[in-house]
Image 1 (cartoon, helix red, strand yellow):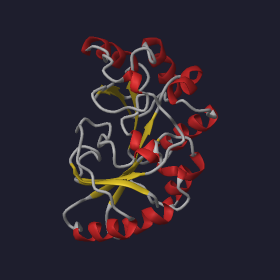
Image 2 (cartoon, helix red, strand yellow):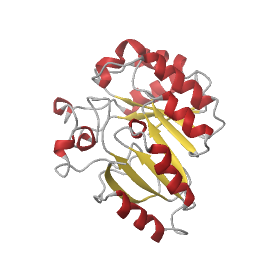
Image 3 (cartoon, one colour):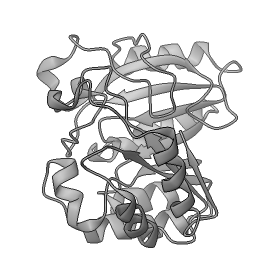
Image 4 (cartoon, one colour):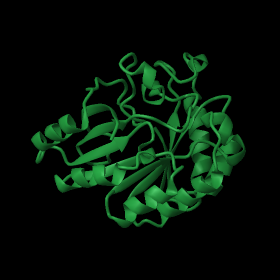
Length: 246
């Protein structure tokens, strides 16, 4: 596994669990608003601090670590941490992800996977092998805007397939969308709601521009107002069981 960084402690990233966060290196998206450019652009590794996750803990110190060092660390946290969050980048790009997660599970930790949903085959494999305990999938945009938002060619049918796999998994899960002015509007929330209709949880995340981003033109850009976000959340509630703002 190519590891981009390790955050040793989080109270927010795995609901109701104390966790560590592993950042895998590399992503097949180039989302304009991405908070973790060092994981997208390997040549920037070591230059940029990155967000711990989408859950609002802000900028966190991270540790560079190889796989052996990671597992030595995890062994010292048995009985202290409850879970490990695997995020990125995009973890499902790595063919050795199942073996990597099994080693974590063998230490007794629960595992939460963050994914962009572009590899439904890997997702299904992990679920069937009971290697993950919680799934968070980023839904970036409605179909017609996806490539604009993620900066890459995509097969939207794979996104839809991943959504179905997650909803049918019987695992706790969430969908989440970072809402960026000029990229996403209220009508888009309706369209995305149709994609994940009847899902358990959907979190609308307020865009933050006070950190290095993949598209630096977005740095300093104002986010939607609280009122705007509340209105979008009300739209989302028409489609899913719970829609909240982060």
